[in-house]
Image 1: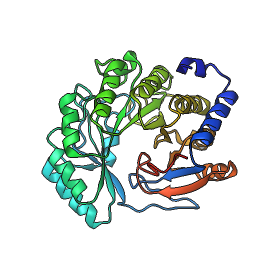
Image 2: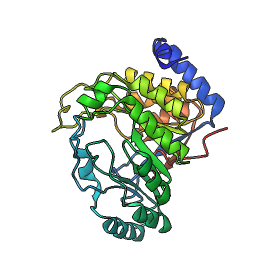
Image 3: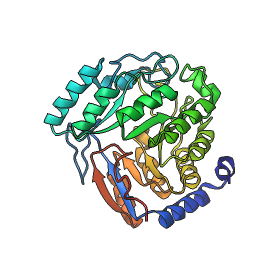
Image 4: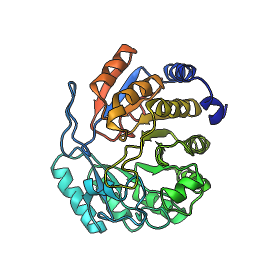
Amino acid sequence: MRAEAYRRLPLEELLLRAWELRRRNFRDVLHLSAPSMKWYRSERYANSPSCFVSVSITGSECALKCKHCGGRLLESMHQVRTPEELAELGRRLVERGARGVLVSGGADAKGCVPLRGFEGALRELREMGLRVIVHSGIVGEDDVAALRRAGVEQVLLDVIGSESTAREVYHLQAMPEDYLRSMRLLREAGITIAPHVVVGLHGGRVVGEYRALEMIAEAGAEIVVVVALSPMPGTAYGSVSPPAPEEVARVVAVARLLNPHAMLSLGCARAPADKRRIETLAIDAGVNTIAYPSDEAVSHAERRGLEVVFSELCCTLAGAGAWRR
């Protein structure tokens, strides 16, 4: 079935199908991710301040100023500008006990994070013993060749399934096919991809998310991440209504059904008011991993017969390779 056919099913039936598929193909384990990018403390677990951190290679600058972010997400990252600064930061992080880094940054006018030129520093980080993943944006052949030389473990990229969303939200003259081509280039180079779908990205409305899921399935991603718009004060979308938890759950369930053997993660972002409801529904929809879970979600997972395992790595790394039956 295609995404739209699944989308039309009653939510209860959709969740049941997704849950049964998860139980058939995966171990009864839910990996819970709490990297150091955010402070996390619950009844079960507390993270450390420096185990897994995020780094921006463009400082606080981004050419796009997307409506949902406006560059605000870069402010919470460690900020560097040069390969030398990145390598030096890596050495300091290792001294503090870090195990890995997400290297990201603001995008250029073409929607690409300018990682070319940093491949030597990225390779140095790996030689220090760090696990290195990057957020790339749209990539071309030269970008992929640089990432392959760097030996990064994973590439994360947001996948947009609507030309109007790319234009109006990201301020990009890009087509959905540009994201599909990026995923294919990375996969052909032997690089593991972890594509992200943001539910409600277009001002809280679901516009191209199901097309994005179809492209991800077509690319053969081993890891799929779903997040939900969480309106940020001070951005163009600061006052919009986020997508309903049931709409998020519907996207998660379709992601599960279209990618039956991929690790499926509920990533970091979701509106605080809807957090618990989204998480419990995502468990019912067959996720393998949840980032920064609530205590209610952990209890719900256990009631459903899942063993919970905490990790301080990024959700795309937590339990990687250990989730299948």
